[in-house]
Each structure stands twice: as structure tokens, then as C-alpha cells.
Image (cartoon, rainbow over the protein chains, first blue to last red):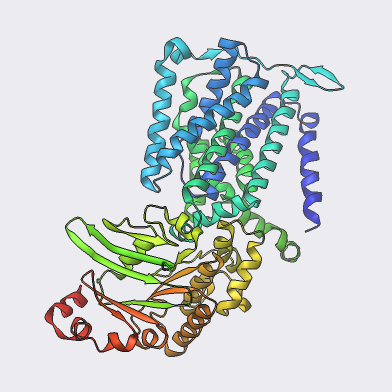
Length: 324
Length: 244
């Protein structure tokens, strides 16, 4: 149990050291993208892993956050520092309205409505040409300078600098989600997931607690989308593609849903894995798909935790079991 | 003084089927009211109406003289009207304390885990608190359900066949437990097929057949009622009701 804070500190130090060690721009780019995914996927874990609703609207929330932030920048000259919270707030509000309708259902009906919502939002982004420029997208987004009290203004456009912004945001998102799931609210999430009719019969509103997870999750996705938009410098309707929600679900489910740490690690692994498999050229998607299918079929707890169980010495685990 | 919980003329129609036809009932603190009747008579529907899962087509449910029949199930539970289910409902994968704490969490108790341990102690499962619900025997799961309900601090406790599928010794534990809860001042509404249990602990019994209340009174009185005997044993329609 005493080992965990030390381990957490070591991980943070190691993550801080990444730009000092990794000078390859491409690998740094992958680290930044995986950090963005960590934020989005933590939000998805609240919905899928903690209250147990399979939402396929999550990538749409991500894209809407990217678009909100991009539009505020292009049309109103708002910098990312204003655009990011605005995107999180607006998308959170949209999730509140959407949730007040669809969180009254569960199971396949909920899943289908979230897909429809995501497709509708894609149509809006594509066809509202006056506002979004349709397929042409919105180019020219910039990363604003960062002002730190006592130090002054820093240019963070370089990858090695922007990495720290994303890292900081990911750590904040993680601590926020951890505080939430460890609170009585998070305990109620799990009770709703485990047995909704029973939780209701004992006085817990499944609707209210699903809503909290849904709105917080959507806001996190939007924040991640905002970071991504300004980092890449361009948004287009491609952000709404179904492949984004697929990869996010893979990160959550194979990472180990309902654990926060698992999906966060999943975000890193499944950002890097397809790229590392590039060595295998045209075989890589087949190898990747095989890993996914096998893991989905035979590893219901995801791939990370069973792996730890196999690799970490048994006596160490037993000593630290209570902390896990 | 009005009763703690009162149902007035409760009627429920599902499409063309009348599941309940104007049933009245009332229960007071420290009283055990049993609801009996053949299968399909409408007993569980009555529970569903009282706990807000089914809206009555007609009639009303009053708790402390306030209507509760338009409230959501979780709201009714928070007020202190809490049920168990005919088919065992537990939080299978969770440790007992976490699942039983649900009711205490729902009313924002400052120490839900402690309330959970108290409830587990009341039903005699304290020694198994480290297990998960799925690891318990069927009989223990039925007791766990009662612990779950108790942690929600009920004033009215509705038990749907708590002794079903239990052997004699296990159903004795249920009887002892209900007697203990009544002594604490809880109002208990009991649906039960085990007539030994019903006749031992009920203060009053109401009998429902085809959605209609056909008898209401002390256990001895109800046992000798001609319509009750007919509903259970006599007429062909009773056999038909059982077959359904």
C-alpha cells in the first residue's frame, strides 16, 4: 500500500522526462495524441465502465468540442484558454439535454440513439457550410502562448512544450475522475451498473447518476477535442468518423473498464500499437485486428490487469492487494 | 389518526386485463400485514403499485397521509417504503458491505459502511461480510436482500416471498427476523405462500383472488373464511388460477 504513491510519483517523473529523452518528432506526436485520448477515454470510462451504458456518442462529443473551440477561435478570436472551458461547458450542456431524453432508456435503444445522435452531428458539421465550411474544414488554428505567474509568457507551439500542457491536462482529468469515482457518487455509479432496478428500489436515482457520468464524460471528451483541434491546427467532419468511437471503446474495454487506470493505459497502448506494427507493413491491420478479437473474446477484464496478474510476483501482489 | 401506509381502491389494468380491482389496505407501525392469494392473484402487482413501479389506473397510495402513487420508485424508497423482490435481487459482484450500503448512501447517511454492517448483523450475515453476494447460498441471499432493505432505514418494509424455496430451519430464521423487526416498530407487508409462516406472525391477513380482495382480518378469521377456502381449494376457477 505504501508502494503506490511512490510508484505514482515515479510514473509522473518518467512522463515529465519524455521530451528530454524522446527527440523524434513523430514519437513525441504519438505521446501527445495518446495524452489527448487519455482525457477522452477517462470520460468514456465513467459512462461505459462505471454506470455501464454503452455510449457511441463519445467521439461526437470529442468532435463537437474540437469544433466549438475551433469556431470560437476562427469567428471570435477566442484563444484555446477560453475555447477549451467553453467547449467543455457547451458540450456538457448538450449532453445534459440529450441525456434527459435518452438516459431514460438502457441497452440497445440507448446505443442506437447515441449512434443516431453522432451521425446527426456529423451531418450538421458537413452541411452547415456557412458556419463550418463543410468538408473543407476549419484550418489555421493556433496554439496560444502560455502565461505562468512569476515566469512570464512561454511559447508552447513546439511539440516538446505542448506535450506538458497535454500531460498536465491528463493528470488533472485523472485526479478529477478518481475523486469522483471514490466519492459516494462513484459508489452509486457502480450500484446502478450492477443492478439498476435494485438500486432504484433502495432509493438511488439511476437517471440522476447516469446523467452525472454522462455529462462529466462528455465535457472531458470536449476538452480533449479542443486540445486536439488546436494541436493539429485543423478540424473537419472526419473527426466524427465511426472509427474514433471504435478506437476509444477498444481503449476502455481492453484497457479494463471501470478502473480509470486501465483505460488510461489502454489509450497509450492503442495509440502506439498500430504505429509500432507498421513494421509489418500490410500485415499490420490483420495483426492488430487479431489481437483485438482474441482479447475481446477471451479477456473480459481487458488485457492489462490479467497481464499484471501474470507478470507481477504473487507475494508482492498479496501484500499490496488492499490498495488495488 | 391515519394509517402509516394506506392503499385506497387500488385498481390496475394491463391492456384488457384487470390485475387489481379496487383493493384497500392499511398498515401501522409494529404491525405485520400479510397478503396472500393464489398465483397470479395480483400480489406482486400490489407491491409494484405501492413502491412506484406500476402506476395505479385508479385509486391511490397514501404514506403518512400524503399521496405517493405518482412518485418515482427511488423517491418512495427514500421516504421509507422499501421492498424486496420475489426473484432474488442482489449486487452479485460486490462485497456485501458495498451492496448493503446502497440504501444508506441513498439517504446520504454519513457512514454508509457502518449502517451496512449493522444491517448485516441484524440478519445474521455479519460473519460473511467479506464475501461477495454471488458467493452466498440461496438462503443467505434472501437474508441479504432483507439487509439491503434495512440499510435504507424503512418505516414500511415490503417482503415478497422471503421464505420461498427455503427449508424449515431457514424459514424459521425469517420468521424470527420479522418478529424482531416488528418489535422495532417497523410496519411489515408480507407476501408469502408458506402458510405456516403467514399464520404464525401475521397480525392481519388480506386475501386477494383475481385482483379482488376477498377477505381481511385476523389470521384465524381468514383461515376459516368460506371464500378463501374456495379460492385455494374448491372451485374450478381456483385451479385455473393456479395453473396460470
